[in-house]
Image (cartoon, rainbow, N blue to C red):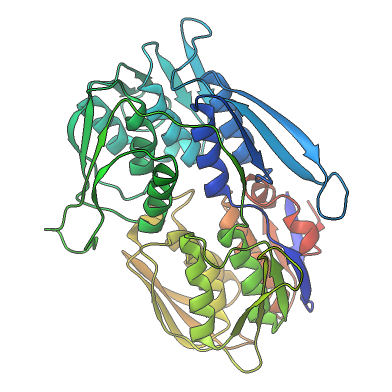
Length: 453
């Protein structure tokens, strides 16, 4: 699908979609809990549907219901999840899981599959089957689990079969999803088994802190920590020790807004001037992509939080800009998903912007460093690629022309260029626009995009 977005003023009040990271973690914990959990206001997206399908394949029962929101309309979704009491419920001699485009679902389900004693085959779409699972496969094997890539290339499809025997393993994490997968599954291994994980490389630290926060909320014991972690210091090796015999208790929660999705709306405010007001975000949330607000403030935007009068602790966030945007240097190691949207903001800035320490952005849905450099060039923006980063040579607020770009099926690239189109000198046509459904349904209506192919 090709969507064309024309330059136009973007001043709006928008309720941010729920967090995908929180939604998927909550679904997996609820799926293995000892009873019935309720998840209110989850993200409704293709990635969520992939996660639900995976959890059902492992034995959980999940039903969705519409419930009234503050206005009385039945607009909110609630998932009722009947957990498996920490077990994989066998529905045959084999289990098949298709994770679609969701890397988080694939890796979390791989580790969960190691808790059972029947083979689980896991696969995904063409894009996901190009993303390496090799470090996680190796770690699972080190824990006594049968885990192999069907084609021997370290990618899906993979086959995983327990039991989980525990032990000491080393797990290099260019993506944090590998470690989060082990952290969620290891406590459910049998009592007496210990999983001891050393992590010589750890990118995306905030996502691990989020997973550990969920373990803490569940009173799951663990030892070790992430203190003094720096991926550029080779002699620093964090260690986490997780005893088995744990249980997940049922819970009832509401999913907060997604800072990753909010970044594209905040970028729209930055390049057009705004103001744009965002609702549904928790200023105290541990989501790493909250860092984008610091980037915009450093570039010259006004970022203002206000508590909503009469609400139960709900805040509004308003982003606006009066003067020009300024370039700078930003370390995105902890938040590589911000690369596309930060690169677009940088394209409208005066001077150079260096986005550094993000070699792992090359192993996401696409090689985001290469794709952003190539596609920005189509709109007249010059970039310099580095092995572990991107320098954007900004042309100021009028330095982005119109044209056509290819999202390469990457939802974050498609949405970043939609924000660019709002302040470009002419419309921008975005190929592969349907990919935004994995994380932000309704995005193109919000951008007033026109389907042209």
